[in-house]
Image (cartoon, rainbow, N blue to C red; front, side):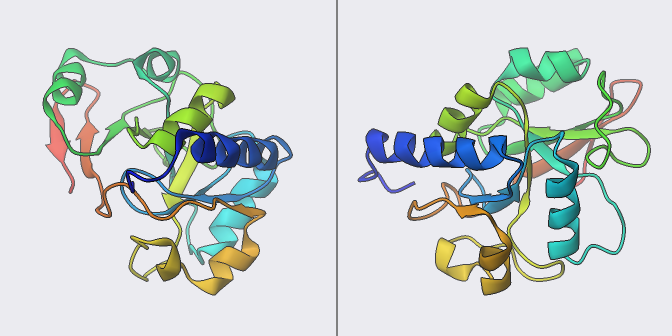
Length: 192
C-alpha cells in the first residue's frame, strides 16, 4: 500500500466497511494481494450475490481472511507443518485446511475444507480487528478475467454490485498468494 495513506484514512474506511458488512452488505476492498470482494461468513445473501456476480458455475469454496492465528485456531486444527510454513513464508500465503471446526455453508469446499489467509495489509488488519470474525474473500473480478491489482482495474459491474467500495489507492502486493493444501495426515501440497 502507498506509504502516504494515513492511518486515519485507513481507520475511516475500515469503519465504513464495517457498517456495510454488519448490515449484510458486499464489500470491495484492497488486500495484501489483489483487490477482493467479500462479506461476512453468515451472510447468505452476501454469499449468493458474490457467487452470482462472479458468474461461478459451481459453488466452489471461498477463502476467508482471519486476523491472526488465535482466530484461525477457533476454526481449524493447525498442524505443526502449517505453523512452520506460516513462520517461514514471507509472501501472502493461503492454506487449505482439510476440515473446519465450524460449519460455514457456501464457504467450505464440497469436501468440508476451509481456505484461510492471514493478511498483512493495514486495511484488512484494521477491519479484522473490529470484526472479530473471518471475512469472506475472493478476487474482485468476473470469473475468468484477470484479478485486479489496482482499483481502476476492477470491472464496473463488480463496482456497481457492491454495497461499498473502499476508497484506498491500491492493493499491497498486486500478486496472488501462494496456496498450499494440507492433507488429513498433515502433509503439504503446493497448489500455486
